[in-house]
Amino acid sequence: KQKTAYEIASCLVGSEMCIRDRASMKQKQEEHEDKPRNGPLSDIRVVEMGQLLAGPFCGQLLADFGAEVIKCEPPGVGDPMRQWGREKPYGKSLWWPVVARNKKSLTINLRTAEGQAIIHDLVKSCDILIENFRPGTMERWNLGYDRLKEINPKLIMVRVTGFGQTGPYASRAGYGSIGEAMGGLRYVVGDPSTQPSRMGVSIGDELAATYACLGAMMALHARDRTGVGQIVDSAIYEAVLAMMESMVTEYSVAGYIRERTGPILPNVSPSNIFNTKDGKLLLIGANQDTVFARLAEAMDRPDLATDPRYATHAARGEHQAELDGLIDDWTKTIDLDPLQEKLNDAGVPCGLIYTAPDMLEDPHFKARNAIVDVEHPDFGTIKMQNVAPRLSDTPGAVRHVGPELGQNTDEVLADILGYAEDQIIAWRDAGIV
Image (cartoon, rainbow, N blue to C red):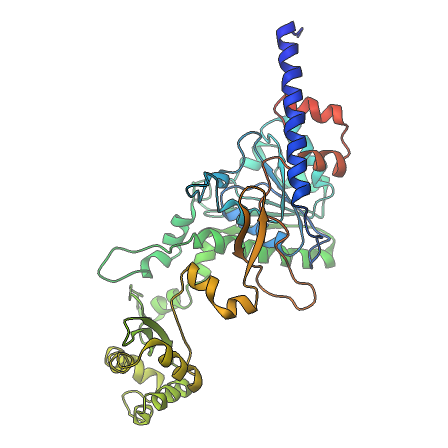
C-alpha cells in the first residue's frame, strides 16, 4: 500500500528511535561484558522458547555450564518473569537477573510465518530446543518436532508441561502448584492440624526443569551414539512424583498413607528442631545408630544408646516423641554456640535454619563462593546463588545477569543467521522481531 507522508515520517521517527534504543542497549551490554563462555556445554547451542519458570529454569541450568542459550521472547512484552519478584524501591524484577542469567534475548513473534521461518533457520545450528507451552501449541506454529527434525535430525526437543505430552490431561493448563498437589507433595507438607501447605519456592516447576535438563544430557549422550535427536517429555506432576520416595509402594503393599507430620518424619528419630537455653532453634539429625551413640555421649547419657527403647532405628522411631522430648530437655540447658560446638566435636550433624542474611554472613558459604557478586546495569553489584554442582575441571559460572529485552536480537539475526540489516529493520518495523 502507498504510505502517506505522515506514515512515512512516523516510520522514519520510529526507526531513528529504534536505532537509538539499540545503541543504548549495546552500550549497556559492553559496559557489562560477558565473561568468556566456557564450561562443559560451551559447544552446545540452545533455543529457549518457554516462559515463566519451568522451561526457563532448565535453560538457566544449561547456560550456567556454558551452553549458548538464546531465549525467545515476544517483542515489546518479554517473558512475564521480567515482572515477577518485583521489590520496592527498584520497580524491576529481582528474580529475572537470576533465572535469565547467562542467556541471550531474541525478541521474535512466533505467531507469524516470518517468525517461524527465523526459528527454522536457527534450528539448523541448534542442539536443544526448550519449550513449555501447552501440547499442540508448537505444532500450530509450524514448530512441532516432526517439522523441526526435518530441518535438523540431530535436534533434541525438551518439552516441559504440567501433565506431559500424552494422556487424558495433556491438554489441560498445568502450573507447578497443581503438579505439586497431584504428585503427592502438597499432601505431606505442613502441620497435621492445618490444610496442606506449599513450599516457599516453586519446587514443582524447578523439579520438572531439573529432570528436563537431566533428560537433555542423556539425549545428548544418546545422540553421540546414534546421530539423531529425540523428544524429552518432562511433566511437572511426574517430576514431583519421582521425589516421593516409597509413598506409592507403602500404600500398594501395606495400605499405609503418609500424612502431614510437621517438622519430623514419622519413625525417623532423632531428626527434629530443638530449643536452646538462649531461645534459639537448632536442627539435629542423629537417626543412624552410630550417630545416635555419639549424641548420647555428648549428652553424658551413653546409656541411651543401649536402652532397648532407643538402641535401634526401629525402636527410636517407635518412641519418637519420648526421645525428642529427652533431647529437647537437654538442649534447653545449653546456649546455641556451645551446643553447636559440642555436637560438631562429637560428629553429630546439626545446623541452624538459615534465612538470606544468615547465608550472606556464613564463613562456609564465603569460603566456597556459594553466593557470588554479579554486575547489574541498573542495580550495580547484586548477589545471587552460584552454580551447582561443582565440576573440578570444567566448572560452570555466572557470567552475567538476565539480559535486557531484545538485547541480542541483532547479534542472533545478523551474526549467527547472517540476515542483512535492511531485512532486520523491516522485520522490526513489522513487529516480527
